[in-house]
Length: 400
Image 1 (cartoon, rainbow, N blue to C red):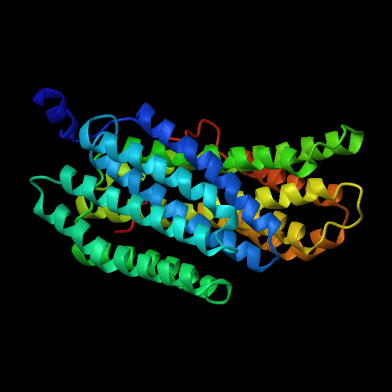
Image 2 (tube, one colour):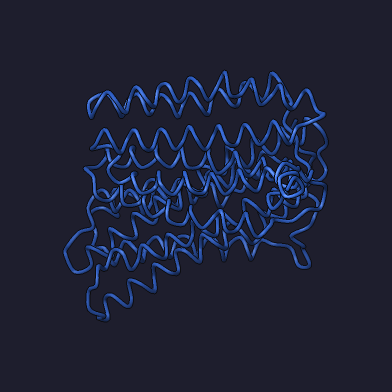
């Protein structure tokens, strides 16, 4: 009777070289649905407010996902207490996702989102305390984070949910900004977080990028809404897929290997600080950029043959890709890499051309963005030295 219970209470500490477990992949499937719900919030509301609402919800989802990526790097996700925490969090996140589309229009749905978010973060904290047995500094870090970050954040979210439409947006925005800031400050002051496996952490974040890219593909069909296949629809779909291909190439061609290698070389507190900056913070604009791009693609597919694209679609297409590239550039520079001039130029060009995209036909807008991201891929490929390996040294030690 006691042996099964004892197994449930165990913790399998992670070690260098560990890979992502199948339970973590299963856990991520909830976020496939979550990303779709975020796009729904953005597309069905009144812009620009709906765009901000979507980013607020995405921030909550991102922080819940990031918290569990750190936990699984401390202790294996497929054993004991941590396994139970992952399963409980999956349930809470899925229920929150069901409420997300109405979270900014109904008090009950907003309360559900807040309650589920609090449950996920508290479950994470409890499992982390168990995983940190024998490490007083790590356990102190978890407690400080709960008191200084989670409690005030949930209080602001709860106040916003009960305040109704007029006060919810500002209070929820304040909550997510506070959460991001408080976690950063407590990590710097307490310095208790640890990264056990650089390979696991890098792979974990590469997988969430893949899932987000899937939303940019799903958005093609969502935008069509069952429309008949015509040459315009086929061409628009093909060009939209090429945008996703360009984003994939911009991230996966060289960046993951650079980041993982830098994380492998760093040790102790410097490694945890690097992981926090590059993955927990700079990867948020990477994911947000993909989701915003997906909104632009969905809007563009809705407007095929209807005249100009409009400001929502234009700014989402150009701005989404620019935001994605900005997160990738920040990650590369943080690990000691040089400023990638073609990417910086592409960011400026895409941000600047967004008003033009709003004023041209949807098909033309998709073609312009697809051309821009694919031209960038060609330029970067041509600039790569012969025999240059993605596993090459970054060139400079990571900044601590």
